[in-house]
Image (cartoon, rainbow, N blue to C red; front, side, top):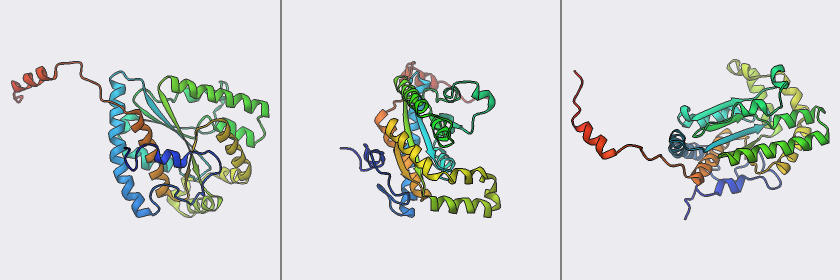
Length: 279
């Protein structure tokens, strides 16, 4: 029997198969901040243990990895999720990549070119703060992609993710679902708090003015490139717990194993018995 917080409990509850949950809701797991923080602490221990096994497996010649894709409107907490969730594990086993607007050099290549360069190596948990989905979202909202071009990109992305799966990378795609009301509060906080002003981008208001168009664009992405998970993001404490649990369930299902040593353990222990302290 699966543990209460194991199996597919959180993945099943948060998987997008229709209408999105309310951004301020807690569909599964803790409903209050103190309990969520307590659970995140214990989740950190489990996540760290699983990540260590995956990393060791990769060092031992394994080919598997995990890629966490974080998408969401501005201020939904992509960076905060990376800090609070991936900060729970050994950084040696994590590969982070944040994608902004492509540079002129990147535009000279296929849009997946820069994505491929940032994929996790065997044994790593890769994290994309925004991703290849920006190359559908932004051009669609700004009118730079025709319907035919969108269909082509959906097909390319589906083929790309199938390729990743075939090579041993499990992709976990998470939409951090924030409400426009909460976003407005966070934008104001960035301006009103000197230590947060570096996070503010005047362009965020331009994106906010196209909120319905972005929501429709995301809805199409969820239909054409599943599976996706929607994590309500109005409560940061819930967001962090939910993403941690999504990773834990994924890694638990993968069952990463520490590699067997390629030497005789008993023989090496016997050698140590005769080793003295260096003078």
